[in-house]
Length: 530
Image (tube, rainbow, N blue to C red):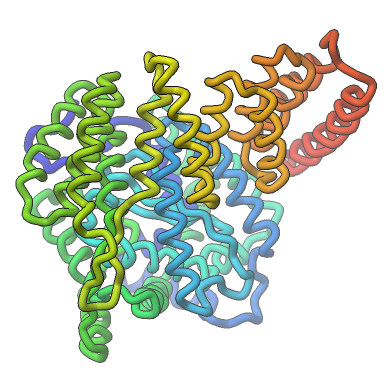
């Protein structure tokens, strides 16, 4: 049950300690969990590699990425992974903009970044090996501007760019990382929140690994420096870094037993704050106007963070209060949030009404230009996606679903890079019985986006509606394989082989794919035994 005294963004987590273990063990959670003694600091100073020194045996980029991908597969199967297209698209567009603004952001390995959100009431963010960066939903809600969000994400990008995880793990034999990944995956899979998971982690090998992963404060300062440069290059207000961390520190003083996880894993010393402030004084103030998408995404995150009855009541109350704000963006965000709440409740007419109000609130601002030269955002892509969500919802009459197909086609033409809208277009074709068109479109999409399991899920749905059993299970096999479920994928291939409509060509594809997946599984099992 939620606390009645602590603020929502400081409430203790409701479920397992798995994510906390992950943040400590593999996130770029640099620094000890508690202030180290002088003796410990001296020990760290002598055992840590010199940052920036390339003459070390770092964790190889290939193994670093593989380790991150292995953990990500498990995270994506977790209920608290926010598998929400608008949120994922916003975070990746926002994060990619930060990376693109600073030439050194990809580091020596040319890291391929992926940004995502997890449902968690603790203020935290973390990076995994290989460029995977997570933001907790509570932190997304606590950020009062895009500059504050940029301060956290840029800091995490700094850790990845400087390969802090790889440099610490590189001191160990690389084959020891496979048991490390297995331990963390086991922690993530623990749903009960028992102390046994912590006991395993803290005992024996777990304690040794934890000590090895206690990064130096120099690494934190290095991430601050890189993050600060990324923020500046991206055109964000660099004072947002101090403002956001300062609010978290103030909250931790009021609720000492509920210190934000980000401050525990990224200890913000007075020295670091002073260093950031000194850097801020050296550059002119730059105003940054937030995009409307920032407010819309936060509204979705607020609804998704707690989907219980009480959580929805609290979200509605928050949006009602937000409607009284003077800012059009705040008002539109509240109206969008109320539309999403109504959609979640199945109140489709009410959802459409609130969405229309949100669009109307922002319409006068279309094309406006602020003094900073930044064009006003109208959130059109997110509004279009929400409109399709409503029209394609269960219970809509055939006429509305037919209109959804027309709208989805136009939306896809207008926003061809939106993965969410592309899948909504496919779904609209399926719902309206345009199965051949849907299959053709999804096959083309799967060729363009080979690592997207959702496309194969929709393709399986299309084949099922067409009665093509062998192709249905072939598509499911691809979806499971991309999600890391090798055994499930092999099972689907077995079912496909037994299907009465499997052609000679289908059988050849099944046999070839089965050999490939079995080889991958043998390799995984071999790695697991190391």
